[in-house]
Length: 190
Image (tube, rainbow, N blue to C red; front, side, top):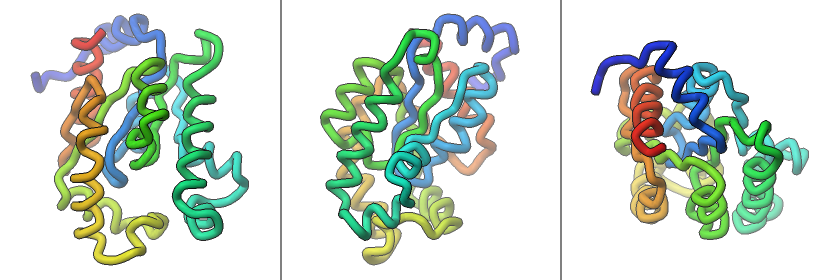
């Protein structure tokens, strides 16, 4: 299970993928950094749903939360992800990193499960806490103790994340290890 895939094995797998790979999971799990590496290996475009939301709203996510609230943000997030999943077959092959709460929305989750390959990236609370402390752009963590908030959110969201057909644990090791696990998970799932 630990051996790396050869470039030929990765190329063969990439040819079998005909829909978006959608990375879901908690904030700080590495969806963006892992997603960029995955997209480079598979020669597919990478899209960060949070960046697309900010571009569409012409505001940062913390500004959207502050001005309009989480429900408004989640509605915009759902519309943006639906747009990213849709489109002609040639543009559907991509890697999409979603925000931590996106897959919790039942409508968004149904769209992702129907039109994409959902991969749940999962980490322990200590790993998440260490990673999220590097950035100050997490509106949900500004409402109290970050460890308590992450623990509660993870517990609340786990049943939704568990609907993703591919589940990969991401630890403190190099992201390349996580990417290899994702590739192997997709290979088995296809």
